[in-house]
Amino acid sequence: MVDIATRVWNHKWKIDPIVRSLIDTDFYKLLMCQSIFRNKPDTQVTFSLINRTRSVPLADLIDEGELREQLDHVRSLSLSRGESTWLRGNTFYGKRQMFRPDFMEWFEGLRLPPYQLERKGDQYELTFEGKWHEVMLWEIPALAILMELRGRAVLDDMGRFELQILYARGMTRLWEKIEALRTVEGVSIADFGTRRRHSFLWQDWCVQAMQEGMGSKFIGTSNCKIAMHRELEAIGTNAHELPMVYAALADSDAELFRAPYDVLSDWHDEHEGNLRIILPDTYGTKGFLDNAPDWLAGWTGIRIDSGDPAAAAETAINWWKSRGEDPRQKRVIFSDGLDVNKIIALQQQFRGRVQCSFGWGTLLTNDFRGLTPNDALAPFSLVCKAVAANGRPTVKLSDNPNKAMGPQSEIDRYKRVFGVGEQEEFEVEV
Image (cartoon, rainbow, N blue to C red; front, side):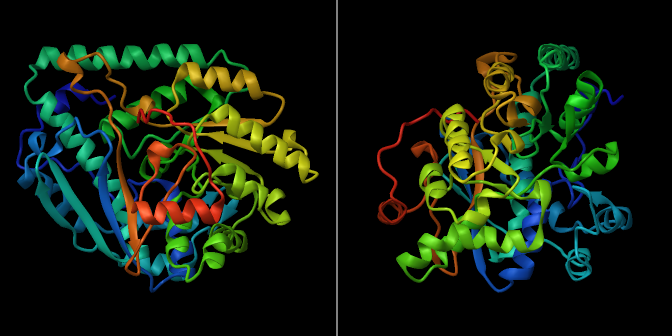
């Protein structure tokens, strides 16, 4: 087993790469990338870093030269032969050759496009512009780099014994969580913690701990590199990015209203079974479901990623019933700000009513809360989102208005088109 504290202590050489592989990313990014490669190959998109936790001064903590070194290193990466073989030949969600030959040929020749980096006060402005299916693959490595560089800045002042104790406490904390969860009847949990992890080594350790401690209740990881190395199921479906860009491309209010369903129509043509998971909250869950075409009710399940998770699950159950579907045969994936108590409460509330599973993210792979002075390693909310498509701004409303993004005039328009009224605000933890 890797001695993480020693590795941290010894990472003083010029560059210790944070991201060492193009498949050190979430599985859903590759699934979406193939869909975009097929359906929207000429769309130009801009992604931008957004630090929702402004109290964390990233530009004061992270040296710009070191950040550029890490970003430049990612631009030098390409698929290895073993990675290509795994993607081409492995079975994902019961399907062999999930990734088409034309997509794989393109991916094997890919180098990530240039980035733009500028300091603005105590924050960084980091943007990526280009063809959608190319720049989208910057999102996960960019977030992982910034999260880990922030962690390194904190850890750099610690001695070797202090580091050993810190990681021992972090490991103990995670194992106590595992002990609490593995007794929960019927629970199914996947690692969704790549984007805001403490580090790659720590995420890999957390995954191994979940494998041993949770047994069959641990169903896989979203991280493709770790899934390949640990022979686990790669988990993931689709994200808000798809409807946000499709909506931005709409030429009228009528096209805008149809955009979230057009996304899933394209997805329906490519995928089946457990990959047919609806993410309904981009422009409000209730309105999305109320106006959804009947064929969507036949999909496998729903992922809940904002707002009150129990309320959203109840909305989904009522919707399935209204469309003549049996909710007990449907899957609900909870994935927003999860930790042990919330997982246990939701499992107990919905077990037997739906098939529950949990995508456990930041508080699986980056929970050092209270373990350093001034809570300097506490996780924070950092995202990298598509902010424009073909020169038009993107908008996200969410079931939590604190996660909304876009120009206010466009937010108001989208609320009108999608019939979104007053919303309850929830604190964005991670």
